[in-house]
Amino acid sequence: MPGITREEVAHLARLARLELADEELDHFAGQLDDIIGAVARVSEVADQDVPPTSHPLPLTNVMRADEVRPSLTPEQALSGAPAQEQQRFKVPQILGED
Amino acid sequence: MTVTELLSYEAALAEYDPVMGLEVHVELGTKTKMFCGCSTELGQDANAQTCPTCLGLPGALPVVNAVGVESAIKIGLALNCEIAEWCRFARKNYFYPDMPKNFQTSQYDEPIAFDGYLDVQLEDGEVFRVEIERAHMEEDTGKSTHIGGATGRIHGASHSLLDYNRAGIPLIEIVTKPIQGAGERAPEVAKAYVAELRELIRALGVSEARMDKGQMRCDVNLSLMRKDAAEFGTRSETKNVNSLRSVERAARFEIQRHAAILEAGGKVVQETRHFHEDDGTTTAGRIKDNAEDYRYFPEPDLVPVAPAREWVEELRKGLPELPRVRRNRLREEWGVSEVEMQAILNAGAVDAIVATTEAGADAASARKWWMGELARNANEKGVSLEELPITPADVARVSALVASGDLNDKLARQVIEGVLAGEGTPDQVVEKRGLKVVSDDGALGAAVDEAIAGNAAVADKIRGGKVAAVGALVGAVMKATRGQADAAKVKDLILEKLGVSEG
Image (cartoon, rainbow over all chains, first blue to last red; front, side):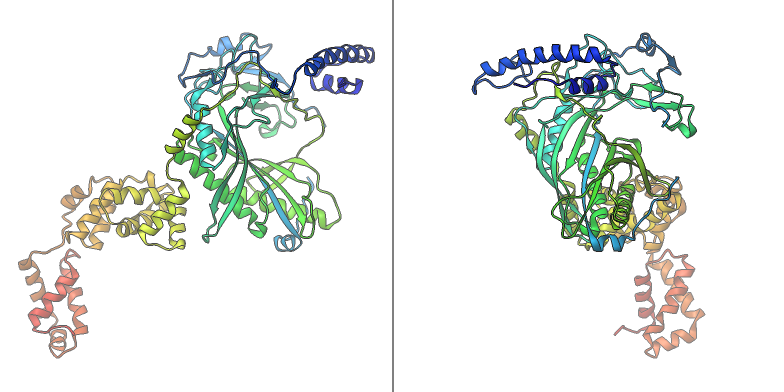
């Protein structure tokens, strides 16, 4: 039965830039393990003749013509930005001191 | 900064075999982005080409650009790849401000094209087959500007500014299988591969593939293995090597650096490295640790791409003649050696010569002008042949005037000079400068008589059988006509007047 360990939850939290306290790690590890276990039961039902799918719709090749559509104005694009400078999105320091 | 120890290239190659993996990103020349209708035009105002989809705003849904898919298939076919019957996009998850979505839409284990090869020809004509692992579709990232650090570097910056105009522009990533067995020619193979790929992409018309504009970028992965080793060594990944010359230099530098580490008993660290154009060195970037865990999963917002076989075959039929095949065909048609052909390639003269022959010139004279007078002129001005203010049709006209005897070589050069100086078409230059071979027998006859009269001693020698002396008289006539005479004709006339026949 595939499950998820406390270490894996800690790793995922770090990748997702979430700071979790020890008790939260315990708590989420248990919950996520339950969810994964529930989802895993689907695999038990699916036989060889049921291909894995990532999509509920029986569709392929939905494409659009290569035609330019109006974009947002820079003002609109930046309207939700917490900070901006020189008509650009301003983001905090990327590399810490090391 | 620590000095990087290097082993001499020869010593490195005596002990080790290089293994390379080349990853090339090509920005497609589509009008719109890969998953939305924002324009891809360069040079626009910052953040003027974004929309909810490429900004990753909640609820926005991507739709694939049909030309993007078509271009990917064309590239795959030209690289002799299999084209997937069914494949999906995947999310590559990472936190970095160059992608506002916090993931890049890419392809993971289901690339649209896989298992191909590209034959590349080295400068001496040797053909080396580079196996292709895969070519997949993805999207470019935004452009960062780092503020507050030295010379715009990310190190020491206080903050960064993001322009997302480039985020979402279609990219095709082309990955080779490990390139083995190239030995000391590995750097040369790397360069030839990228050069050939660039030509191919241009021939397909899917991108201009200008490396200087970032439309084509290469990562050079390289490791060394001792000649008797069974397994590959640890590789370094030199990122964004952005010219052909740099690809060769980066590979060469890494061979020498790895060899020095291994010879000293050390271990090569698996890391990203940055190439420096100024001195041809690389320096360490990030060390790859397990933090780089992209958690790829199938993109739920896009449906699978399943190119119909009829479409694939139709695209295959429409493929242009591949650059290497075309070059070899032209080489045979023109009757030139591998070395001459290489010189023509290096001069960027192939297309100009082809266009000139298409405009009616014979290949030999087209080649002569583009590789001689015009190459010299372009070189002096520091421009490419296409940038010269003369067209292939002009060159073909000059060559026709020479063939008909209206111009000799010397005059033809003056006509070319005139065209380059903006004096008009070849015919206009001939007219304005009065450049015509003097073929009027009367005028020539007078000049010949004068030359004979003025050089009586020489004339006597010739009459006495010293036919070789005729050169002096020909020279005198040419001088008198300011080069506007046909030298062979002058010679015949002189001999005739002196009653001597050749041989």
